Image 1 (cartoon, rainbow, N blue to C red):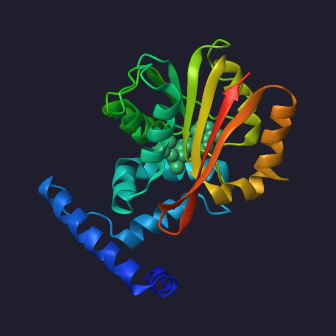
Image 2 (tube, helix red, strand yellow):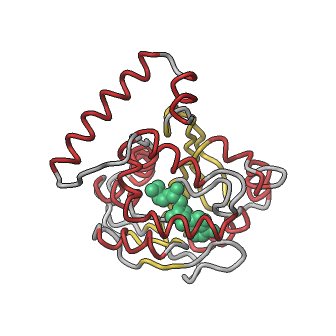
Length: 251
Ligand SMILES: C[S@@+](CC[C@H](N)C(=O)[O-])C[C@H]1O[C@@H](n2cnc3c(N)ncnc32)[C@H](O)[C@@H]1O
């Protein structure tokens, strides 16, 4: 069903390219001893399920917990661009300040941290609500502290002005980080520091954000908490999903 839907929405050339990518991917994963990687459609379907309206935050956390050991495979099979775009945006802000203190918000299985680390940054902590995902993140060896906490109304367990940057990869969307967490994140970033965010553009209109994420972010700007410095769209965050890069400077 999903397969038919995906084919019918896309021109053959596009789909053919994906088949070739999958073939290459399967070969590479087999070489590492993983017998049966998820198919493109399976991976896409699971990644889309996380952000579908319905299950709510707690059931989605359970879903992350039980699929954590396969999460990186899903992302790799669909060639998600979240992490490369996030690392590029972080580099564009931090330049050669490789010791900058970064909190990776909604760190998940650590792919955002891994790409930021590959870009040269060495001082990264992470926070996420799924212990299963954090266990996978820990194995990557790129984080200092990794904290398990659901972000929302409660403050983050860090002092004010601790970090030079908060990075956020795919943190917004249905069942994900509520917008009320933003002032708490801003509090732990130093004035003059940055919040770099890469996510699905459609998340701006997710039902959990009521009137919308944008009006709320603009309200925080009007309150003098931060200032938007960059907003850019890109294609193929995954499959047919448009991505957005947002960079805010903390005031
Ligand atoms: C789509 S994954 C992205 C993970 C990682 N940043 C990446 O780019 O691969 C979203 C992550 O956000 C976490 N998450 C969702 N809502 C959260 C909340 N309210 N507080 C903390 N973590 C949350 C989930 O547990 C999941 O690991």
